Amino acid sequence: MQGTKLGDYIIEVDRIHKTFPDGTQALYDFSTKIRRSEVVVVIGPSGAGKSTFLRCLNGLEDFDKGTITIDGIPLDDNKENRLEIRKEVGMVFQLFNLFPHMTVLENVNLAQMLVRKKDHKEATKVTMSLLEKVGIPEKVQSYPSQLSGGQQQRVAIARALAMVPKVMLFDEATSALDPEMIGEVLDVMKTLAQEGMTMVVVTHEMGFAREVGDRVIFMDEGRTVEEGSVEQIFSNPQRARTRQFISQIL
Amino acid sequence: MPPVNSPISRRPWFPAIRSPWSDIIKFLLVLAALAWLLYRGTKSLGYNWQWHRVSRYILSVKDGKVIFGPLIQGLLVTLRICGWSLVFSFFFGLSTALLRMSDSLVGRGVARSYLELIRNTPLLVQLFFLYFVVAPVLGIDRFTAGVLALSLFEGAYASEIFRAGIASIARGQWEAAHSLGLSTFHTYRYIVLPQAIRYILPPLTSQAVALIKDSALVSTIAIYDLTMQGQVIISETFLTFEIWFTVAAIYLFLTVVLSTMADIIADRLKTGS
Image 1 (cartoon, rainbow over the protein chains, first blue to last red):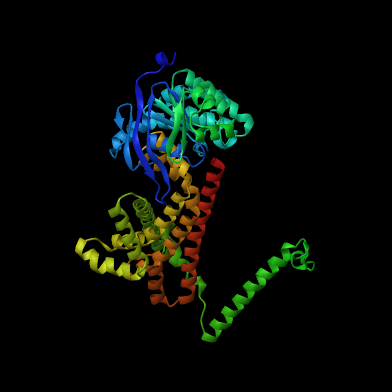
Image 2: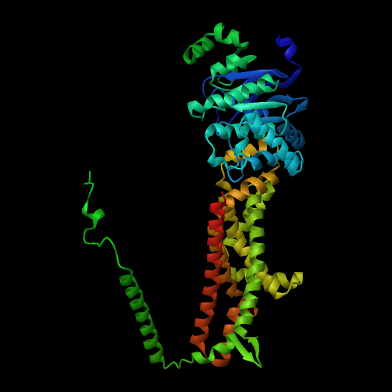
């Protein structure tokens, strides 16, 4: 079944290294390939380099060695390539990062109008349909401070989707939410996965990983310890470190 | 551990509700004391107060027409100088702040040298340098030289205000903007500056007030601003005390109006979000 759903490789990460200025080595010789429509769940203890990996994928973080190619575009020092990749890669943050001085409508419209050069009417149409999709069309004129955490995160997802990205990155998108709000955000993410969005998800929600993940990467100390299908990693991990981590979180 | 209700924090001898009258009376007493001191001092100097002669230097009516006296004309010059200088000092301040925060080594170097140069030399010397050295070379008039000196000077201080305001915006805002593909210019224009302006406005107002006060220095290069007109009137009439009091009051009026306007804008910004 997976063979028919998945396409060619859209993300190719080849042997990247990343050391922070303070000397911490966040990524060490890290490689992976992600297919179109694949949902990759990245797990691991904190400090494993999961977020750094994600942030490298859209150029928020520079890496020292190696190459990243997204949909055929190399992520290098070329500014236009970087901008192109950022347009194609949407990101959802742990702390939402909505623009507090703008309404929901303005938050979602902004990049459509500035980057995709749509006029206000066109952008608003897209925004309304996306708010419909994430389930809060009635909040279109609210400011972020008037929304709950779950609602803010759903707006943030809509804002990223408005750019019509080819890849969506989720950096612990539910970690800052109250327990009763996690479900509504995960539901939106599940819908996206079912629609065939390519997703790289850093999360501690193992239920979500089991339900929609095509592949799990278990990272520790900046490297891949083990990767494989959800069944493989959760039910039959090969490495001792993986077994130890899985037993702690399940 | 000190007792919770220590006598210092309770201050039992202090009445809970104070009548405003006690404050008003104290204020009037202080004013009266100052006035008395002034009166005593000027009397011992043998100063002859002639307030009635001041009004014609502000406004006069001739043949049913209102004529601006020299003080008002000076005020208009001061306003023109301050207006231009304000615009340019914001421009210099913002561009210097952006340069200092840019990736360009040259840009940071230029911004840094400008700040050090301006902040470590007296404004009066800068003014003379621009007027006596730069102006003849570049062929600019004294008004432009004055505006340039003031705006370069205030711009250096304004740039630190802009920089602090911009730095106060959370990193996540930048990251969200970048992840959406917004350029650095758009990020500043739509995300960072609109949020930073609330932190920037109060200190920037103080800077604008400082600019108005410092503008009095342009009288030294013979620009007929408020201060210069005051000096001229005094040299003709010997109304030293009356004119300086009046000039000071006009500056005070200007700066108070400016601060009040800034307060109103700040309130608007607060309720806007």
